[in-house]
View 1 (tube, rainbow, N blue to C red):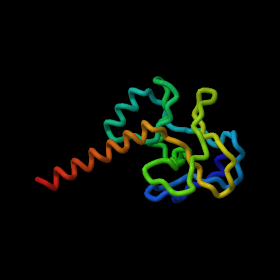
View 2: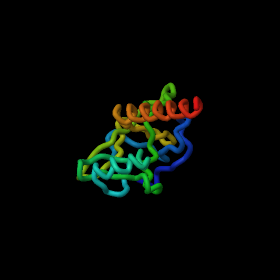
View 3: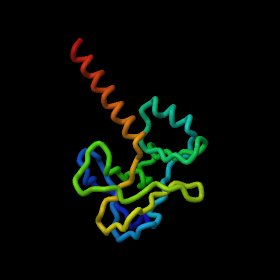
View 4: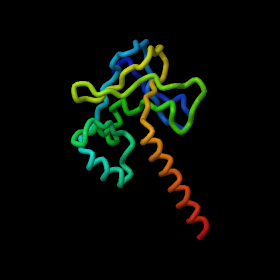
Length: 146
């Protein structure tokens, strides 16, 4: 299936690259395996402290798939249509799924050739991102006031 996917500029502004399909995909089809380095949740926390985060698929406390240092792991390029920037008419069309102790992106509806794949990152992810944005803005404001 990877040969049927392409990475190009996302249709969601300020989202960088996105993952697109070159062929029609049926609802329920496993599209692409989420690949990367296998690490523990404790290691995820340590990497987050070093700002090395954002591409983790959680399987269990002992098994997380981290694609931060694996740019050729194409599943990491699927964006969340319900993220910081919403575009009218864009909705998530995939889900993350654990199958056989591996992470997958699976179609939650029929997807047409040429469409971008969108998958929910979850409310907790966006809560943390918004918190970090506010924290960074506060730091910048404090620096300007000095």
